[in-house]
Image (cartoon, rainbow, N blue to C red; front, side):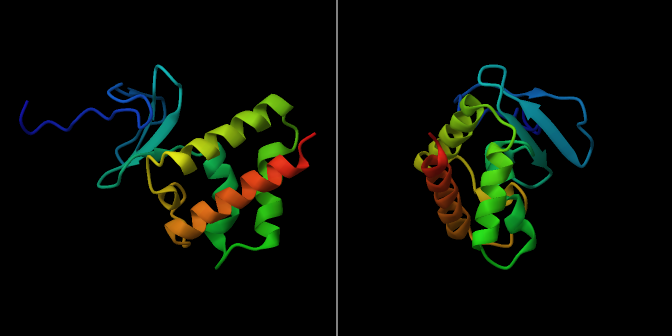
Length: 137
C-alpha cells in the first residue's frame, strides 16, 4: 500500500523478507533472514547493516576508535575472530568476510560507524583474511 514502509529484505537472499528479533526498539530494529540466518541492524534513515557479532563487525571493532589501521588493530581483529573458536568457525568467518569483499552488499564502515573510509575498511578486512589464512594449519 502507498505510504507504508517497505519490508526489509535480506542483502544476500534476494527477495527474502527479514523477520524482526527481540530487542527491536523505536530507535533500532534487529532483523534476521529466515533462510541464511544473517542478522541485521537498522536505524531510521540509515541502510541495513550486519548486526554486532557478525565477523565483519568483530574485525572492524578496533578501527571504530582509532585514526587508522595499524598492526595492533590487525592483531585485535585476528584475535577476535579466532581465539577460543573451532577451526570451522574461523573458516566460516573468513568465508563471510571474503563474500562481502567479493560481492558487496553494504558500506561496511556503517556497521560500527567507523571513522575510516570504506576503502580503508575493506583493505583492512582483506588484511585480516590474509592474516587468518597465514596462521591456519
